[in-house]
Figure 1: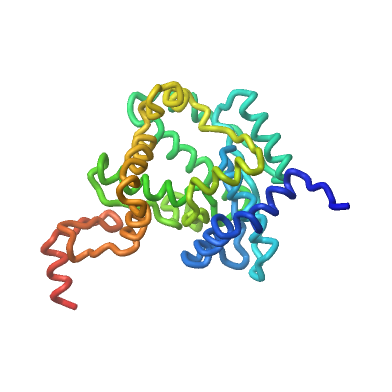
Figure 2: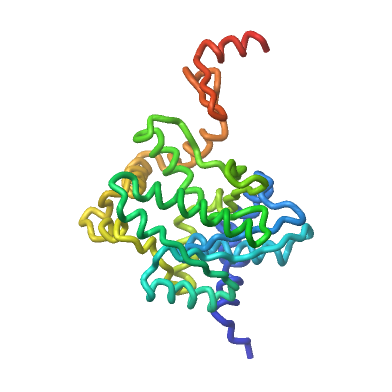
Length: 284
């Protein structure tokens, strides 16, 4: 008689078997390609309570089980001011998926709700600072965030159309304010649609952002509201109707930037003009 699997065992098995090609393989490929995990690392997996970070936690657990290059994990949840029912949902999901989380509090929602401009940007910046500080306190040298392939593409497009810059979301980043700390994005090659498929297959319900700005967006009839990221999702959906590979093309483009075709480039706070680039080319 076959053994009845727990929700955790079912979720883990689905990662390795049913979603091996769409979740496990792209995850491992990103870890190897961008050298995200090294022997002896102590990595703080940052869990917001959403589908992406919960899946990231399970993938990192699987990687630790199967790797021959040992590293340590700790799982952090920052409560920026969630309603009690939202915090409870995170705790219940973590328990069901056997993710041993450490929860700490902050007042980020109270601060960002008063911001007149870019509250989501402010929230993200504040969250990252809190996460770095807590991870460092716990003896970690890296934090892992749940940004995926779709986030990378949408961020690149949003920066171009609204930020007036060609700027991507890197797979790893050294912190300027927390020496010795590094941010990694192991879901870099994983598509959001596959994360959603895994969630639905396992009948899992995760937390959304849970702040008043996303509540306004979700209440909007067009499904976009005031979120520029949601607007990028809609735009990409339309573009894919005539070019199914548009997201892959954008992703490939950030891996093959032709600097000698750029009129100006910024690097580590310095600006280089077309003439600077031209002179450099002549020198080589």
